[in-house]
Length: 258
Image 1 (cartoon, one colour):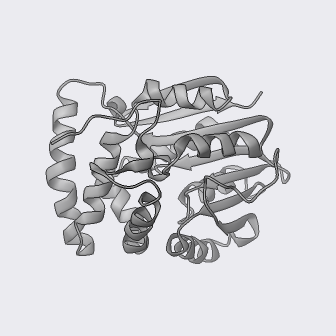
Image 2 (spheres, rainbow, N blue to C red; image 1 turned 60 degrees about the vertical axis):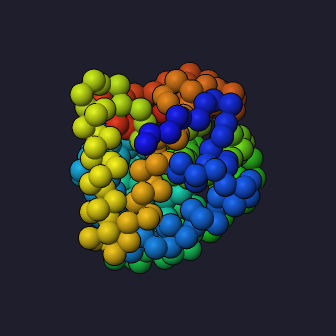
């Protein structure tokens, strides 16, 4: 079964995968998923993308092209394990500062441990908070990034509005997310891989299939490229665009606060 995607008008706030849940219930369910997979989150991404998430994340960093400047400030949301933030800091020659925000303390704990091992702690701040209510004043950041996290936020429109609020004028939003496959045949193969192989591999690796089943289903419920771009525009961003990766399995969305 493949359920229909939500539209630019919303619907993800009551969608826990293919299940409809009460408003306000989704966040707790998603938190449980990420508490379960935090220690093996990178392995999970490798399974779900066949390793391609690393290439896509590098493409995000190339698009961002962070300044080699100690005053350059990035907010990476839903980035608890630090994967994107580490790349940003390294690309800035360890000059930029990245604030890693995640609602899940288990994910942040993994990120903090990894930052210490990499010697990047001075360039990073870890904050446990909700993407729908960012604990920052307006006009604080040069860039806002979120990779494979926006579809897990119940009220995506609210999160996008918050992103717009905390960015400086001239700041950039970059959202990397699984999306709608645009290539015939690849879409069939990807469905087979997603619904039959990924939960099975997830159970082999972590002992649990349910978190992977949710994540696969959440990808199919997320708005397609055009609808999500419309949501970004509605939040106030200008020059909104997207780039498909691997036939649309993932897409990088961009918007500017002008």
